[in-house]
Picture 1 (spheres, rainbow, N blue to C red):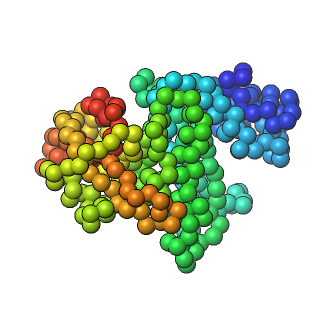
Picture 2: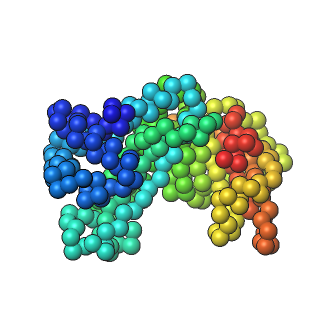
Picture 3: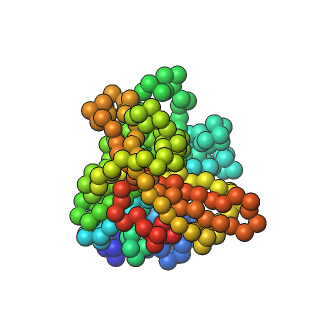
Length: 310
């Protein structure tokens, strides 16, 4: 039962109730209290457990992360993070104390999990981190001038830092995220000798010499790129093509070097530049006039055809 528990919470009874509830979630593949409890008594038990002030998300996540830390020793682990919006507008009459979701009118909340996955076996090791929040205020007028720590986008750095801490005994950590995670502060702060980034790019980047990353990719004159740096992925192509089709049609990879921009953020001013490596993977898909392409930057030594197909 220890492997399926979610915390001690300072009380043996709470530990047992939490472990039982999680075991039911695993067995029944759902989170509805009515379906998790075998009878009215168990339903009341689970509700009282969740409403207990000693039961916190922080301890639940920290407890589950210990299992990932133990399993990650000596492995190359992918820390996959993304944000989900949980919309409760259809149940607005029965839900209270929620915030607004992305459309600015519906009620709900946001969750940002980080999952650990073995890069070689593709085994899911478990939950590394989880951030949960409500959006109760509008965007500040000076939002762009605020430090990253005061923005919702700080979740990408916090998730990455937590992954580095939990996976301290892993041989290598690669943090993967979608285009919302293409934040300059993340590139400047997270990478180190054993931590790399792989991100779907949201925007083109200015280079130290005044050029642009997209243009520089086509330049045959490339600088030498040292090891142990970050990675960046730029995805493009037809939105109606499934991931399985894209993977199946992957044809080739080419790598070149380039330089990233000089930082303009005060905290990152000590970093003159970030050096990155570029790679391109192209794919042909039937019934499409244009091929799909992915552009990846990063000097990752494991950046090969087999991993790109994954």
